Each structure stands twice: as C-alpha cells, then as structure tokens.
Amino acid sequence: MTISSDTTPAADAAPGLLAPDADARADAWQEPAPTALLVLADGTVIEGFGIGARGAAVGEVCFNTAMTGYQEILTDPSYAGQIVTFTFPHIGNVGVNDEDIETVNMAAASGVRGCVVRDEVTAPSNHRATRRFDAWLAARGIIGISGVDTRALTALIREKGMPNALIAHDPDGRFDLADLKRQAAAWGGLEGLDLAKDVTHGQTFNWDETTWTLGEGYGRLTDPQHHVVVIDYGIKRNILRLLADQGCKLTVLPATATAEEVLAHAPDGVFLSNGPGDPAATGDYAVPMIREIVARDIPTFGICLGHQMLGIALGGKTEKMHQGHHGANHPVMDHTTGKVEITSMNHGFAVDAASLPDSVEQTHVSLFDGSNCGLRLKEKPVFSVQYHPEASPGPRDSHYLFTRFVNLIRARKGQEAVAER
Image (cartoon, one colour):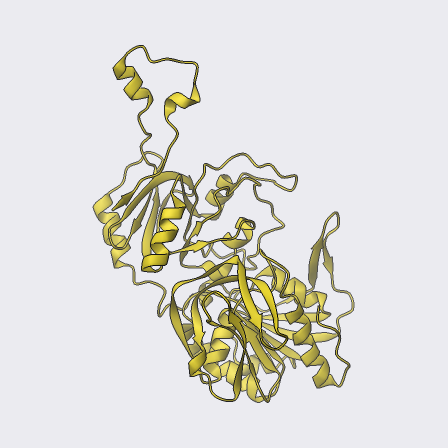
C-alpha cells in the first residue's frame, strides 16, 4: 500500500491563467515529485515533501496528539529513536525560539529521528519566534516530511501498532527505494535498546534555574531548602525548574551513577528522570542503584522511564505497548485523592500492574486504557508516575506531584507539610 500526499495543483497558484491547450493544462495540474519518503518495515511507502535535514534515519513511528508544544516535543530526549507523527495539522506556524528547548545535553545529537506533518511549514507568526521551524530542524539534524495524510497514518498505527520505519529526504527526489525498504525492515526496533546513555549529560552539574515568567524570563533559586540528587536518564529542563521552584538545590548525575556516587552527595531526596528506550535494558545498571536508594529510606520520586525502572526495582515487570501514549490530553485517575487530571504523556513501555508485589500500591491509572500510571511503596517514602508532570508541553494539573515529593523530604526532616499545588 502507498499513501500519497494530497498536494495543491500548480494551476491553483495562478488562478487567472488559462492553459492554451490540453497538453499544457495537463502539465499545469501535474503533481510535484516527492522529495521525502517514509518507508515502513512492511514495505508501505508514504510520499511527501522534505523539510529539515537531508539524509535518512531509522526509527519507530508514533503519533502525538498535542495541539501545542512541538518544539518541546522534538527536544524531549524521551523521543530518542522515534519518528513523531503530529496529528495536529499546523506544525511550525509559530516558529521556534531558544527558550523552549527541553534538552539539557546540548552537545548530544537530537534523539528524535524524524517528524511527520500534514501541512506545509509557513513563516512564523509569534512574537517569541526567532527562527523558522524548517531551518531549525535542519540545524538540529532532524529529518522531516510534510504533505502526509497524518490521519491515515495514525489510523494505521492504531490498527497495527507502532511500526519501524525509515524517513528520507532528498531535495532532488532521488531515492533507492529497494535499499530504503531493506534498511527499514532490518532495523530491530526499541525493544532491548538502552538509549539513556546516548542522551544523558554525562557529567555531574548543578542546577538553580526556576520557571519562566512573561516579561522576566527564567529566575534563579537564591535560598535552597533541600538538596535533591537528580539521575539524568534524559531529563527535561522544566522538570529541573519545577524542582528548583520547590526550594531544591539540584545536583544532576549521569544515567550510570552508582548508589555510592548518589549517597556521596548526602541527598535529602532522589529524583529518577524521564528518558528513552527499553527500561529493562537501562535497568541493567540503574535498577541496582535504585534498590539501594530505596533500602536507605531516602525520599524518591520517579517519572516516565524512572517510574518504569522503579517498578522493576520493586519486583515488577514492564511491557511494550501497542501504540503507546503520546500527547497532552491523557486523563489519569489519582486514587490517592479521587481526582482526575489531564496529563502529558510520552511512553511506549508500561509497568505491568499485575506483576507488582503486595508491598507496592498502584496510585494512578490511565482512563484511556486502564494501564498503570503511578505507584508508591506502602512502607517507604517512594513513589512514581508514568506521565510528564512538568507540562512542557501540556496541562499543569500534575504540578502538585513536585510538592508531594518535597513533603516527603520535609517529613523526613521533621518539618511541617505544605498544601499540594
């Protein structure tokens, strides 16, 4: 099956001109040749028009339903190894800027392998924009394809699951289709891949930047109350900012940090970050560290990949999802409060709730499919959630979790808790 892009006939660009004869009229309506392809592992070829970087890359195709925040999505290290299909058609219309980048490790190559969009990229129309979206993609080495029927591609993913694929861009439209199909079919996929080592910062560093305010930009933490060690499996900047907003001095360690290295900083709490890849693979080195931290009764908070590896460390298992959860409109029930929050998600693996031991309580559940979205240890100050509570991009319903984490630290210090917000 080939899914071809819908393109505007050339004659429409000059409605006042009439073709002098039938042959000229046929030429005027000829569809432009594709300059980009998305080749699925099963041989499906999707044609479109290239944007961003030139070349080819393999990855797993997912779809994201968020209507805003494409720059944050494409700089989220959790998307390493994936090709993101945006279901919202107008991607790139507000341009990009340097303030909305979520990647901490700017020295690393962009983790995302490519992006798929419906409409042609237009000039930016936002006062914060400093660059066109397509030029920014090229500068970051991200291959894009536009003019794709993203609804059809999304329906295909929902029916068959997230396919492995190759995305290619050549402005001259020259493709060795047989070779591209071979490469797409040969790629092994995300299962078994440890990608956290590729996106982690690699060096220990401190963080004191707080959240952004219109007209003022980002602030600085001046009076830290607590010391938190953050394990960087692919941390996003706004997660660090929200922790700093809570009065936390932050020491960020690489993904491969050992328990001894964490404990050497005498932390009040430990944060396990988001990240890409298969949690079972990353867990080879991360899970032993997490188990030791949990055994020390140190307040611990994990999200996304950190949540999954905490689940493994506590005796549970993870599983690959059919289509994953990617978007900013996912409803989750918090069983500890009875409230429903709308969350931002990005994950293709999930904790199998049935595999968790009796010492672990399931705290959050997806209202889309009932999958596990949170857990806590009944007898220790340890909890985690599957989604991204920092809202970059997405709703701010889940900001209370950062206060919940710091309240565990306060309790350990004998301090009074504050209201979750």
